[in-house]
Image 1 (tube, rainbow, N blue to C red):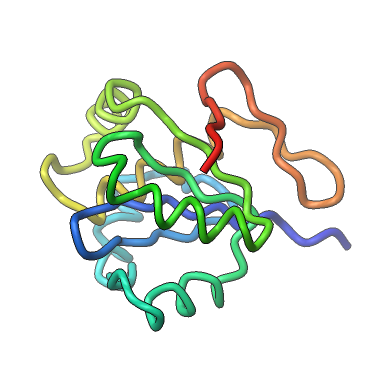
Image 2: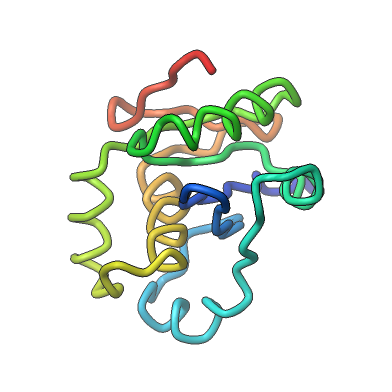
Length: 141
């Protein structure tokens, strides 16, 4: 039995991130958010936060390119550990979050929207890989 890819939506702030790990997109995102958002860890930009994120064994981490100065270090470290980084445009995430009736200005909602957006708009491939469509772009970290 093939294990599912772990996709983490990472909402990046100045000194911390909120991580939402998913293996599949929830059917009802609003309900999933209501029942699970308190369990999404807030990780700080230090050695412990990085260790905790890597311990989630992500295959892919999805971020917005906003606040790139803050997200660059996370992307660089994750990429050096073999984690695929996907960047999703802010307008795509906002539209997706609104269409799923998730709250605005909420780090956990943004992290969930990023992970679910990636899982909704990608195809799972063999060997735990993710094949992206044109909705994403990769950037060197």
